[in-house]
Image 1 (tube, rainbow, N blue to C red):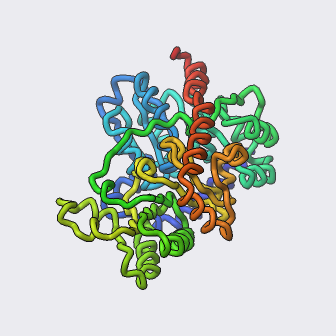
Image 2: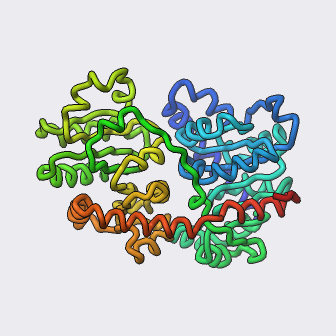
Length: 432
């Protein structure tokens, strides 16, 4: 087994040498220095982190940061928190989300022994919590030899499950290095057991995504949007194109309406802008706006473009506000679900009692099937998308009925935060 770790580390290092320049230069100049230092484990411990114990939490990107935000808030009452992310967008959202708490946001160090040991030596965390299923062999193996390592809100997609079964000889000792694994449901418990996790380490804690709390933010510009308002959230290529085509087809007959397009990845903002402008080039009665331009407006009453047009398409070129935007919509379209990606989180729209449409690819959120069976969510294939969207636009009562059903199911599934905290505190010897 030791040989496998040596081989993995050597291979990882070779790949890192190849990709490091690209990864460094693709980041904005203001982030490069922070990124390279933290990826190699060069971190400074502030005075506030010397006064009490800290706990290390890893959340890959935006979705994971948001899903564990309520857990983080509770844990800061007991510990200072180091929160690591992999992506720049995850960093940005985490910094905003926890700006008033004792949370130090860092990039996850490279999965090399000396990088990981530097972070452990600097902060001496009480435990490492990893959100969902982020398996870094050296991070888990090395850290678990010093402190408890706990996997929280864990899931194992069908694709990952099949892959891990093929490399069970390597993955089994890694995942058994976890002190405990809090899984979302029975399906994931069975999958972890099948790839070799000792069953006594697995706790069914539920899905903390159902325990989200979203504050209400009122935007100055929202009052100038014509209803129905449709939010296409966390879209991937080429979803923007067919969603916009459906909108144009439907609203060639409808008098007014608004489409907000929210790409999943900020590096695609310019590409999506070009796509929208190309498709709108023959539609003089539909106004295209970018959210960044709208927010720069000092006086909306003097902006006749915003007021006069009854049909608008708005590109949301801003990170971290989708969950607030769902409040102002009538229909939410969930991106990443019309392509073989696995879908994005629909719960933020359900939280605001909105009607939800997804595509057929929602493997990352298997709980969605119960919502679909109960008529609480529309799961449609691409060829039926325009028809379903048009039907929901016209049938307000149907929209309300679906939204109410979804919200009732949502409330029934809350409570994972308390179960997860109970598991964590039991391991750390604390009381809630």
